[in-house]
Amino acid sequence: MPQLDPEFWLAQTFWLVVIFSILYLVIWKIFLPKITYSIENRKSKIVNDLDEAQKLKESAQKKLDEYNGLIENSKKEAKKILEDNKKKLDKDIEEKRKKFDEEIEKELKNVESEINDLKKSSIPKIAIIAAETSSEIIKNIMNTEVNKSNVSAITNDIIKRKIEKHI
Image 1 (cartoon, rainbow, N blue to C red):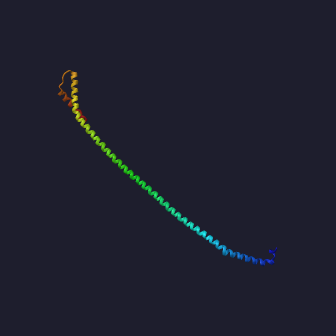
Image 2: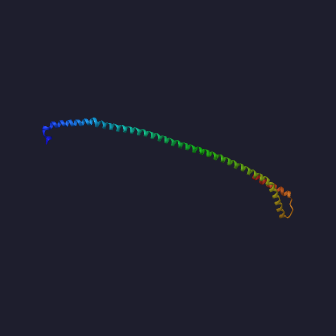
Image 3: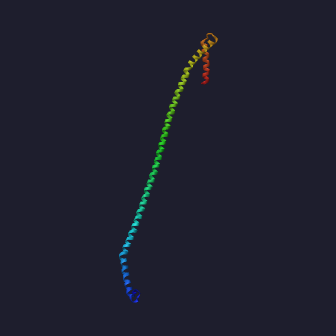
C-alpha cells in the first residue's frame, strides 16, 4: 500500500497541507463571511422582533389600562346617574305624598266642618222630633193632651246636657 510506504510520506504531507490550506482559505474567505452575515442578520432580526414585541406588549398594556379606566369611569358615572335618579325619584315621591297628605287633610277638614254643620243644624231638628215623639208617647200612655211647650223645654234641657257631655 502506497500510503504506508515512508517514501511517499513527504509528498502526501505536502499535498495534505496544500489541500487543507486551500480548503481553510476557501471556508475562511467565502463560506465563513456568509455564515457570519446570516447569523448576524438572524440575531438582529430576533432582537428587532423582540423589541417590536416589547413595544406591542407595552402598547397593549396601555390600551388595557385605558379600557379598564373607561370601564371604571363608566361604572362610576352609571352609579352616579342611578343615585341622582333615586334621589330625584325619592324627592318626587315625597312631594306627591305631601300633596296627597295636604289633600287628605283638606278633605278631612271639609268633612269635619260638614259634620259639625250637620250636628249644629240637626240639634234643633232632633229637639223638635224628640218633643213631638215624647208628646205622642205621653199622650198615648196617659190618654191626655200634654202641653207641648213644657215637653219641648224638658227635651231641650236633656239634649243640651247630652251634647255638653259629648262635646
